[in-house]
Figure 1 (cartoon, rainbow, N blue to C red):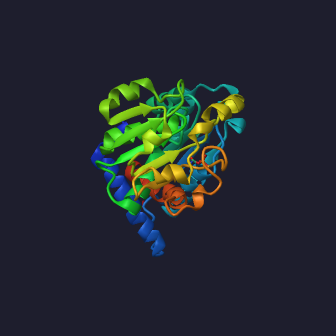
Figure 2 (cartoon, rainbow, N blue to C red; figure 1 turned 90 degrees about the horizontal axis):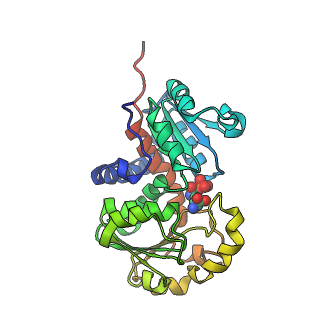
Figure 3 (cartoon, protein in one colour; figure 1 turned 60 degrees about the horizontal axis):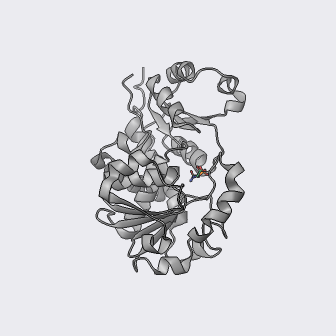
Length: 306
Ligand code: CP
Ligand code: NVA
């Protein structure tokens, strides 16, 4: 199959990623100025959600409508996917009717298998391994608030989860340093760490990770699908809460990001989202703009009139 997919940051070159971020900023400006821009008229995005979502669903759905197209929400609960229809068969059928498919799933292999059998672009809306669309928004937000991330240092505090893995891929592709502070046994993907080499450092002490960092980010301690481990994780991750004092140990112009949803009093202190160093609301909004840039990049423009 020849379609271009976005399953990870590795599916684009650094130039393409920077182009998407720039384009996200342009599309944001167009929307703020009330300019209609509908290159995807008649185009349809299918969205398969095996897990809950607020931002991802809304941003893709609103984004497609704003670009002139439509989005269809597909839940395994009421499609044949939930009754065991093989992914490869679903991909063949769906991709004959849709112009792109976004999937939020557990096993990353669901995405790769769907993509291998799809005629149209497949977008990773989060898997257990990666969350690349969120990283596009994070990188756009950093660019808007502080300029280029190239050569800067980011710190990831807490669980070495899907977000952390995507931060590693972003560090490789966009050329910045990353320090990960996590408890033993909760490290990010070992192969990604090996690939990143000196670019990524894993430490145990959050203060060591944030020292001089320009960007600090964290995420929930128990991701979707890990609900059974929540109590155990709560106790173990307690020393990894990000609060104002921890940000004080970072660079003076540090930017705090969180993909949301956040748990105040757990991975962040009650007051952190109100700190002037936090840009989480812009970050959430940027999901819309940068994913519109991604859809514009991946999906063929509108049909010609007959
Ligand atoms: N950050 C993010 O992906 O949010 P949702 O789970 O609400 O989509
Ligand atoms: N790591 C979290 C991110 C949610 C947007 C999860 O996978 O649940």
